[in-house]
Length: 317
Image (cartoon, rainbow, N blue to C red):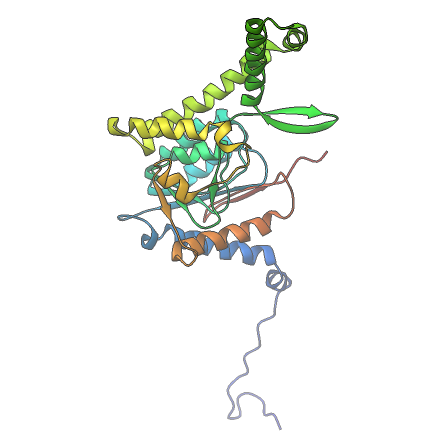
C-alpha cells in the first residue's frame, strides 16, 4: 500500500510533461538529417583533413540546376557569415551554367581564405569545371568528374530544346567555306554550297566564337594565377586549356574527365581519393544526404554550411 510523503518515504517527483513540440521534433526527419550533415561538414573542416592549423571552413553547393548570377549574392552572404578561414573547402556538384559568374564565384571564395579547395563528389561540369580550375587543389574520388568547357547554345529543333556546342556552329561554317574553296579549285558548280552559306547567321556565329574565346580566356587566367601559377607551368596551362576546350577531343559536352586523367594528362593539382579514404567517405555521405534533401526537382539548389542552410526550389510555372 502506497504511503503518503512525510511518513518515512521521500516525496515523489512528478515525471516531466512531454510537450507537443518535443514530440514533433522526434518526427522531424529534415531536422535530424540537417544535424547529420552539419556533423559531416564539421568533420571535413577538421585538422584531420586540412593542412596546417585552422580555422577551416566548408561550404557545400549542391545543384541540380544551372549555375547563375542569382547564386552570387547567396554565396557572398554565406561567406560573410563564415568569416576568414585558413582553408576553404567548397563541396561542388553542378552541371554547369553561366560562365560569366565563374570569376566572381572564385574571387569571393578566395577573398576569405589562404587556401581554396574544391571537393567534387559527383560532377562539376562546364562552368563548374572552371570554378575548380580556380582552386589550389581539387579533391576527386571514384565517382568524381570534370568536363569540357566549350560554351553551349540553347536551340529548338523540331519543337524540342537542345544544347549544342558553340564550336559546332563555327565548325559548320568553316566546313562550308572549305567545301566552297575546293569546288572553286576543282572547277565544280558552287551553287548549292553558296545557298547554304547564304543561310548562315554570321553575327550569331561571331558570337559563338566570342563565347568559345571567353571560356578559354577564363580557364587560362584561373590556371595561370592560381592552380598552375609560375612561368615554368606555362606549357601545362596551354595544354590544359586546349584540351578542355576541344570539341574534337571530347566529342560531346557530357564526356567524363576523371581525376586520374585530370592529374596525369592535364597536369592539374588533383588529390585522388580511394573509395575507402576517410575524407572521401565523409564527402560522399554528405553529398548523398544533400541530394536526398533536394528531392527529385531538376532545378533545385542547396547552399549549406555548419551554421546556414538555403534550399532554393525551382520556380513555379
